Amino acid sequence: MSATTTIVTGGTEPRDVQPVRRGFDWGQPFVYLVALVIAAIAVGPVLYVFMGGLRTTADLNANPAGFPDPWTLQNWAEVLGAPRFWGNVFASTVLAVATTIGVVVAGLMAAFVLARYDFRGRQGLYTLFAAGLMFPLTVAALPLTLLLRTLGLHGTYLGVIIPGIAFALPTTIIILVPFLRAIPAELEEAAMIDGATRIGFFWRIMLPLSKPGLITVGILAFVASWNGYLLPLLVISTGSLPQELWPLPLGVTQFSSQYSQNTGAILAYTSLAMIPALAFFLLAEKRIVGGLTGAVKG
Image (cartoon, rainbow, N blue to C red; front, side, top):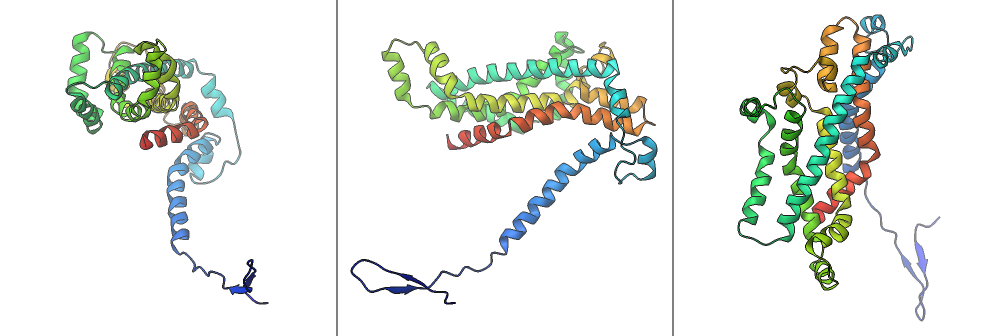
């Protein structure tokens, strides 16, 4: 069978066109291999924790790398039946929701001013927020602790929420400013002609159009607050709050130290603590990617 293709064109003689032969791209399998290795490194520990929660401690001690034999839900039932676990869930929910609301509201207001107003020092202020990405919490641990003690916020939820908002603002502003800046100025001019004020333009036009960016920063702030460990450790663990009202990352540490011999229950507690953040992140994955893509395009 011939490998050539005959093409007939109007007013001309048929001619043979040789098919284009493409060589094998050795780069593609390598890319997929690297992606699979990275995915295995990222997902492997999570799967191990979940499967470990479905095993007995004796089974884990006998074969740490094996599959559950037998499968059991006793560890999960033990953790879910403990009032301490639900107290930790309540504390993490309060901290995550309050931090997320504060990050979205404060970040949106600051980003709106930086994106839509022209004033002296605007670029310097934006650079200052961007520079905040280079200063991790560990650098400010000691002065932050002393400041919270001076303000009387040490050992309270507010002592975690307010610094959590502050440390999340640089990322929030970096994402939101391109969104707000990309909205055409003609829309604002048309709204002003129709009698809208700047506040009216902000609520009726700016806010709906920036919804993808708001969802993105909200999800990132929620997951970061839910999984936050160092800030609650500095503020709450040394305060007067009972252990039943500590957030889940501290609850996992306290539970593992108290039940160090019950490895299955510790893994079950850890897997249950991860479920809300994982579910929230996976359900909103497309929105996060869309929001980050919009920020890059803007």
